[in-house]
Length: 357
Image (cartoon, rainbow, N blue to C red; front, side, top):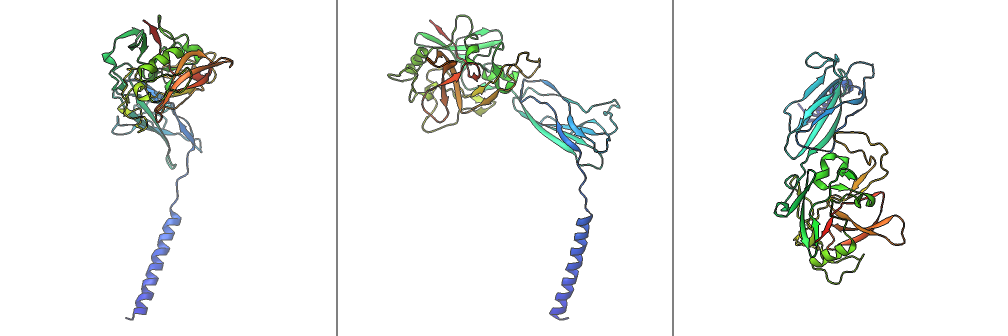
């Protein structure tokens, strides 16, 4: 058989296979989608062994049929849990809305929660959310600050170590008074981890009895202990950031990134500042709703600068500027202690209290 005939036969076979393949593709149909987007609430941070109920919403059947729901939590669960079948019942034969209740472990880590809505003949709809188990206190999620070696006192359930600098005692942890301010992410579990973010007006009221918000003079005294010479009030104080920073870890993740211009963190002052960022608090709710896991005092609060900034109120108002006060702050890549001004009602910063000896 000639090469030309072989080529022709090969071409015919290839064309036939292509036609069959195209026919198969044309006959392959993609299932229609359910209507809407799946939604459920899950706090970003929770305490160990917290029990969370997740209630699915947002998805409907285009033909007004029944939906099923199943869930998976990683790394806790090895297989999915169906909480509602398409007959509207759970695995025990009881009516169900598809809600899923899960008790998270005491392991300090991030968990992935996946929810699925499904119906026969339709593509499923899913949502993936994350929550991180955290623990407050000096032996919780924040580690490597050696706070157990410091003298301390308790205010309610919160332990506050402190260090003496010159004639002044300084707290080594951010204030976590639940009567004011907002916790990181508005998650109550974070209050005793990062401390809370307070407006200036709140900051004046949250220090324990006998303690007060540090003045600029107190900050200059701390700067001198860190090696600054001739520092002036309300000026940038150069080259002392490493002496103020604490080389802490949050759930085993290093908090301050290393920058050559800052150098190795020494924490020689013992102040142990960590980069919890700052908050744009927004308006305070007139009647915050009760919630076991979420703090609704500042429902529109935006938390910014985590792992980059550490910001702390001073007691000093800005002269000639209505409604503004000074705060001191650090940035991860800058070797200096800096100063700025924040609105006394809406800017949220951490609070470190001082006590005169």
